[in-house]
Amino acid sequence: VGNVRELAGKIKIDGIVTADEPMREHTSFRIGGPADLYAAPRTVRDLTRLLSALRDDGVPLFILGGGTNLLVSDRGIRGAVVDTRFLREMRRDGSLITAGAGAEVSAVSALAADGGLSGMEFAYFLPGSLGGALWMNARCYERSVSDILESAQCLEEDLSVNSIAIRAEEWGYKLSPFQGTRRVVLSAGFRLTPGDPREVRAKMETHRRDREAKGHFLFPCAGSVFKNNRAFGAPTGKLLDSLGLKGRRIGGAQVAPFHGNIFINVGGATAADMKALIELAEKETQEKLGFSLEREVILAGEW
Ligand SMILES: Cc1cc2nc3c(=O)[nH]c(=O)nc-3n(C[C@H](O)[C@H](O)[C@H](O)COP(=O)(O)OP(=O)(O)OC[C@H]3O[C@@H](n4cnc5c(N)ncnc54)[C@H](O)[C@@H]3O)c2cc1C
Picture (cartoon, protein in one colour):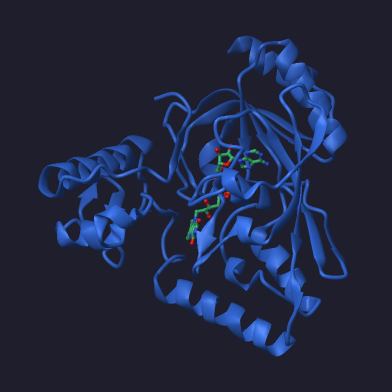
């Protein structure tokens, strides 16, 4: 650990480099202990140099997008957290929108609307970065990111830049070809269609209002904790509700009184509180309904 901290002083990149960075500052749950080393490079070149230095020193790597789907442990993350936040350049070229991994998905959606383009309305007010949305193949309002994905660029494990082919069979419900690999998403392109700007905006506003009405932004949270599964016969939130879990609390962690699948930090929640609540929901669903829930929220760090 000491070596990793020392490394923070030695790394010379354009961007931010700190040691013992509190991850609660970088997660929508507002939970998480320190990362030994935290770095946010400003260019792909600096990102590549940084990853190369970390690899040479054998430092474990965690790539951070918006931190909106993460539960980071109270002990924090050993090794380095590399934040993509500055890699957020966006461009509109006819009906093609291209953006860097660190761009906010919602901002990309807004850029499309400004150009009178339709197809990305569903992602308005979807929290998080483009890279995270590709990694998870984020989905809402019956649309997945892969539905409109035209191209994606990534850093391969050997740190070469690669434009990957989009093969439909590698994408599915909350499934992408980035999961289980060490590839880093750099940018993506979306092919959209010309639409009526007023209709596009109206649809986006409907989604924003729907999220607000569902309480998404009332408390620190990470959206849905568990995936849905058709075999359950009902959305996971309804199942947890049927078990009387809404409002259940452990320490500062609570199953939202307004949504069974959103767990909230009502103030001062630890990662241990939140994890215990997740495990409680899993146990009760298994015992009383016979279903194995699949986590959507990603647990990161040292537990
Ligand atoms: C209020 C709220 C509502 C939400 N609603 C939805 C919803 O409707 N639908 C939905 O699908 N999700 C939803 N989410 C969850 C979350 O917004 C998505 O999963 C989002 O896509 C995560 O993006 P992120 O940038 O925050 O990723 P992070 O949480 O930072 O990271 C998630 C994973 O992606 C990896 N990753 C991130 N960037 C890169 C990169 N550039 N290259 C490689 N790997 C990367 C990380 O290592 C990590 O494993 C919601 C969350 C909140 C807080």
